[in-house]
Image 1 (cartoon, rainbow, N blue to C red):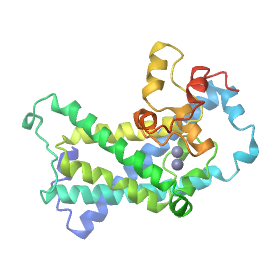
Image 2 (cartoon, rainbow, N blue to C red):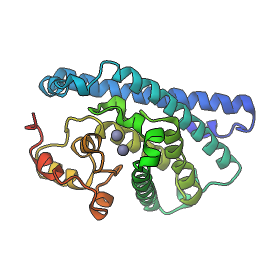
Image 3 (cartoon, helix red, strand yellow):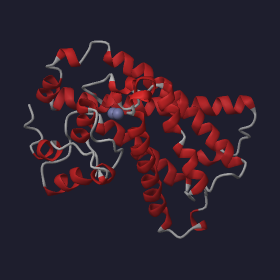
Length: 264
Ligand SMILES: [Zn+2]
Ligand SMILES: [Zn+2]
């Protein structure tokens, strides 16, 4: 059980390193499993869109995949250390994490996830806009934008400074918001899956009423592909509301989204 892992003394250097290693294996596994699933899905079932994506060779350099995996491994290392530090501060009693589900009303479990996602969204949107400031962009955020045509492998391709800035928010959330351990795991899983989906470059939301509603409010492949192509639009992480309020949503997004699948 995950709970028993946290009964170990994280201040012991050997145990701290072992926890970092376990987290690194978990984070890299989910990266390769998710990336692999999407890779096969497009390669086998949506081959036409897959080929179209690669038409513009200039924008899809040969070594892009190798670079993305390299930077994503560095990000995984930073996230692992942040995870181990979060475990350590939890043991020392500085977080609001709880293990006993009856410590809070049951409705708090989903509400805590929604609050955590709202805080994460707000932090990321404004951090992201800051990272596009000309004085910061080159040093911190350009690595991520080296991928002009993205894929699931781009999801965690960050410069270590950006990886560090992004890792800060989870410890901050668990210090302030009481969250059950499984609520945290759920939030982290949503974060990973949505990061992969947002970088697919090929839209996967269904062409029906539900898909249209989803695409209006929840960021997907079309929305984030506009960020990588046009830079100054679409800074959000999970939801589109900050981009709508901040008037940073791409003017072509809605049109392109509603004609998804007919883009090429
Ligand atoms: Zn950006
Ligand atoms: Zn991106």
